Image 1 (cartoon, rainbow, N blue to C red):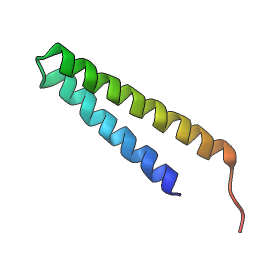
Image 2 (cartoon, rainbow, N blue to C red; image 1 turned 180 degrees about the horizontal axis):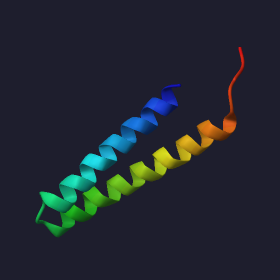
Image 3 (cartoon, rainbow, N blue to C red; image 1 turned 90 degrees about the horizontal axis):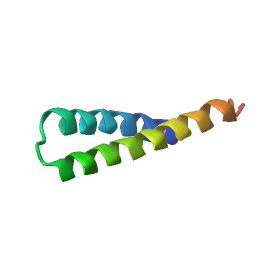
Length: 60
């Protein structure tokens, strides 16, 4: 359960970082750093969600 919250939070932070890097920053190095961080968070969120979906219900 907590992993899904982390993944959703990573997607939200990714959205903010991409928005900031595209619309607010003029420095190319900062744009690159923000975009790279956003893409890494997006990959983390993607693989986390894939793991959660295919691990199935735990039963109880």
